[in-house]
Image: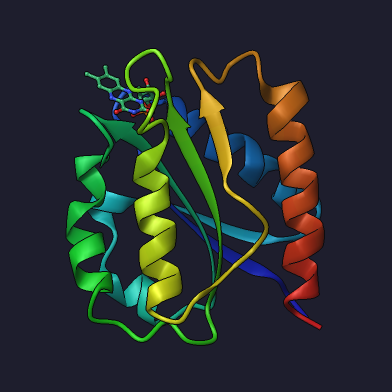
Length: 154
Ligand SMILES: Cc1cc2nc3c(=O)[nH]c(=O)nc-3n(C[C@H](O)[C@H](O)[C@H](O)COP(=O)(O)O)c2cc1C
């Protein structure tokens, strides 16, 4: 069976985009069909019509989700996400906000679960610039995500 993942992300400076692209490259090499979608350009029908997702967002201004995600978040509040699966990637910086570090992605994960969705693994939280974290935390997380993703298809 073909494994397909819709990667929906919000990124202002390109950090989240960089991380989800690194995860997408890894998945594509393992024959996963991947669609990369910027949240602000994504119609809610993408969420309605698919089953497997990777959501990525940065956190801004004391724990708010990246505003590029606002429209989709408000539309997801009315959806039944039963039988849908998602992994979650958050970008943040504890120097801006220690208590609400990466809180944006936690908001999204809470909503997804509240609406009936099932999470794949635990949130990948990246602290600061992601560029030198590809061969460490990002590498470990994407390997684990791929294994758990496959398990949702059996
Ligand atoms: C004004 C400002 C406010 C921020 N607020 C938070 C915050 O509340 N919590 C957090 O974890 N990171 C915070 N950050 C850090 C960003 O989330 C981080 O730089 C992230 O890598 C940006 O990713 P993006 O380029 O994908 O948007 C803030 C950054 C700026 C510039």
